[in-house]
Structure formats: structure tokens, C-alpha cells
Amino acid sequence: MNILYLAHRIPYPPNKGDKIRSFHQLEYLSRSHRIHVACLIDAEEDRAQVAALRPYCASLETAWRGSAGATLRAALALFGSEPLSVAAFHSPDLARRIEQVLQREAIDVAIVFSSQMGQYVPVGAPFPTVVDFIDVDSEKWRVYAERKPWPLSWLYRLEADRLQRYEWELARTHAESVFAAENEADVFRRSAEGIRARGLPNGVDLEYFTRPADPGRAGSSGSSGGNALVFVGMMDYFPNIDAVSYFAEEIFPLVLEETPSAVFRIVGRNPGKRVRDLARRKNVDVVGSVPDVRPYLVDAAVSVAPFRIARGLQNKVLEAMAMEVAVVGTKAAYQGIKAGPEDGIRVADDPAAFARAVTAFLRDPDARREAGRRSRRFAEQHHRWKDHGKALEALLSEVVERHARPLPSAGGQC
Image (cartoon, rainbow, N blue to C red; front, side, top):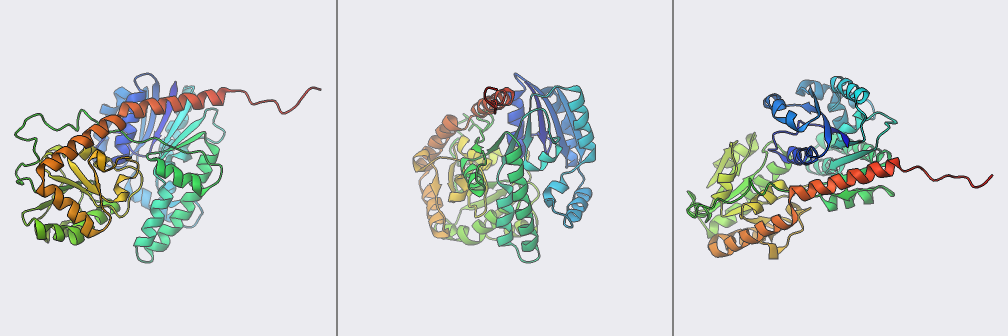
């Protein structure tokens, strides 16, 4: 197949949520198909990644998305009806490049990766389109509106309403809609009657996220003495900021009452002031950006996922499970991961219960090692990227076949 792949960020390197999903889709499909990628670049360090991405692409078109221009376009959209986030991702340069690709290539099917990229598919395009929404972004903005003071609450609610209508229109005018978790697809289907949507869960790189065979490192008892708790994630993302703040302020003090030597490590890029200030609290270490998160997972007794705001599937939970680290999280943390206590995870939604689950693992190294082994086994059985790739490839073939099928005649005999 000749596939047009439209992504709101360059799908490389696979070091954050959306880029992990888009890269693995691209990597798998490129084995058997010609992929024409068009994407935006919004970080200076990502400019250097273009060369690394080219081997996966039959063609690659990129355009710069500067923060100042994106903010201006979003602000101007306030005076119209377009979603602000869609306006922020508009690039005349990329639109021209995509038009040129369509003029020279006979595209069989397009993948729109994130709703913001739907604007780049021409009206009346002669090929079908699959929209990978990843999450229901309109619901994310609605939750933000509930958590933020005015005027942000008003702005986020406005964006939620506009984006929801835009999402519905995309789903109705394109062949299929997919999400990173089945519960997200359920939310979307319930929002508007007749919309097609299905879950296509993420995988995890099981070769990369593997606990070292060195027995000296394999017991979650490194420099921390076996009492380290870890959270890994982008620390300029509001749900992550809320999660680590909630844990440090309401849960971790309860853990320290039982295990005074416990250490809470926050690992991830771009920690803002609210996160950096958590380092003033007892035994909280704001590590910040690291070249490789795996040593911090290996050294951890427990990976914590104390989310109060979450959409879709949490890659950080899957990565910890693959590394055989015991995970304690809220129900929201396990959306899209159909694991239970028998698979090694622990679920707790109030501070006291969460602290008890963490403390139980800290006190019992054998229990957390067994939980880690069960978690790894679950990841191997249910979250392989090759299974995700096969499912996506089958969906694309189905969509192309359906599109090529002639419509039944409306009339009878004359």
C-alpha cells in the first residue's frame, strides 16, 4: 500500500507518549508498505532527528511549528469557531508540501495521527482515511476546565466544546477512528450516535525495557537500599505535575511514617517550579532529564502512578511492568491496561490505601519481585508492538477494500 502518514510531531525519537505510538506504527508499516510521512517539528532538538527517520519513509516532509506563531494562531481562533488546538497546528508550509505529495503519489489510504492533523486531508480526497485520535482530547480539556480557575476554566471549556464538534465531524467524514484504549473508544462512541471507533492499545518495547541479567542489579536494591519509589514522565505535562504533587504532598508522608528511609524520585524532562519545589520536602528528589530512565527503574522498589487526571493508556506504567518493577497506581493509571492484581499491579484510589500498598511492597522484597515477574509476563502477552502493527495493518487493508467496493445500486429493473 501507498500510505500517507500525517503526524502533529515528528515520530522520532520514541521518547514520549504520542511519539512512541507513532514511531512504532511507522516502523512496522514501513516493512511492507511505502509510507509518505508529513509532520511538524516543534522542538529544536528534533530538527536533528529528520535523518534518523528517513530510512522508514518513502518520502518525508517536515515543517517548523514555532511556539510564537502557534500561540498567535490559537489566539486569533478565539474570534471564530475553529478549535484553538487545530488552529495552533496549522502550517501553510506543510499544507503545500502535502499537496505536492498527493500530486505525485497515488495514495491508497491515509493515517491522521491526532485530530489536529485532520485539516490536512483534502475535502473529497480519493482515498480513505483512518484517524488515530489516541485519546479523546476534548474530554481532556473538559477535565482541565474543572481543575483550573477562571479565566482558564472558561477557555478550556470553550476548547472542549469546539474540539468535540470537530472530533465528531472527523469521525463522520473518515473511514475509521481508533484510540489507544478501548475505554476511550467507548467514551467517544457514547458521545455521538452512529460514530465508528475502536481501541488499538499501545505496545511496549520489550527488548529495550528489560531488566538486566546481572544479579547484582536485579533486586531493586541499588543505591537506594531497596526503598526508592519512582515516577517517570514529561514534567511539563499537567496530569504528570498533578500526579507527583498529589503523591508528594498527600501520600508520601504516610509512607515515610512507616518507612522513614523511603525516597521518592521524580524523573523526567522540563520540571517546572511547582515540581522543583517538591524537592524541599523530606526525601523527595527531583532528578529532571536523564539520558536513560532504565537505571532509575532498576533501582526502584516501586513505580508509582498516582494519577487523578489521565486519558488513554499510560506508557510509563507499561514500561515499568516490562522492567519487572512493582507498580502501584490509581484506577485512572490503568486505563487501557487490562491487568489485575493477579498480574502484579496494585490499585488504590485514596491516599491511605495507596500508601499501604506501597509500604507493603517496601516491606516484602519477595512480594514485589513476584509482582514484577507477573507484570513482565502480562506485558509480553498483551502489549507487543508487533501485535499493534498487525492490527493496524489489517484495519488499513479492511478500509481500502471497503473503499474500493462498489456501492450497491439503488434502482431495480427498468
